[in-house]
Image (tube, rainbow, N blue to C red; front, side, top):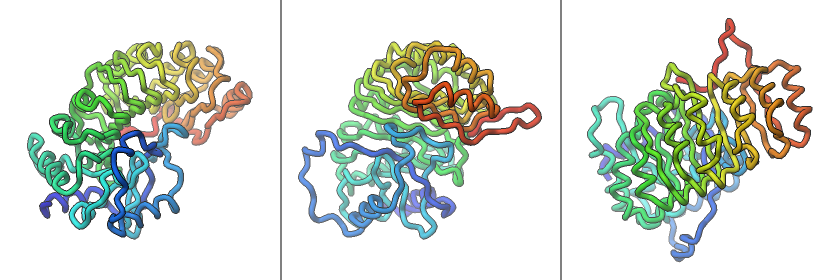
Length: 383
């Protein structure tokens, strides 16, 4: 593997040497695990990484079965430089691990570099070269998770789609696995992510961070269980594409709608397909978050058919006020929910107390009350 590739990979992953925060969710081993014999000859530091992960890390905030991602959910290295970031319940492989050992491809999420702010876009040549170098050392037939790091993930979907036959067990993909100290969320360049959904019919999880240039066409995908769009401004055409998609296996959908200043021009009307639930029969956890029109979203949710089948609902991180909360309390019953996440809000104390009283059997999260700045109500994540 070339020194230039490793240098770029290490620089982006290590960022500024900040304290690590966790990403990832507990990954269930599916039937693919049985297709391989366990390897007894792993490099010692592979096992040490896994042992440290099991013993020393907190519950992953990205576990879709337990919690919605906090606004601070991002990937970091720890102060000593030891690798701590995880994705899909797997530790992200360190660059030197790729060349210095023969790791089990199922035991790690594998990083690939796309995008360099100091260079012009190369049309995917650099990303393709990095993929070739990875597959020259790691058995692609066993890779289950990939994280794409760098200043963008513009080229990754097309290149990965073209090489899907070499990655038959890929189940989890993160486009834009970038820590905030390296690149702001609204600076991350994306492209059309549709090709990865079309080329990987067994993909179970897709996380997309950043929305500059992001595109999606309506799709039908049988296997996808988790879909997340984290952004400071999610374009309306992307929201409409999600609304028009058929995702019969999807259990967790999370979109950060953001603000118009950073491209977040989605309207409540764009959410119609999501709120109807017609293409999402298995959906159990829905997050419509980080919106400057959170009151309007709450009013639409109050009568949305999909809500009746949800276990968890998040309208957090946005500009929710007493008006939106009143809509929720006046709408359909929410007492069947296990979890209602409203953190980062602009509710008065009296309204927060009313919400709790109205839902005595529901875990209601109402931390991080905000104070308007000269009547301006702000979202948790924008730039």
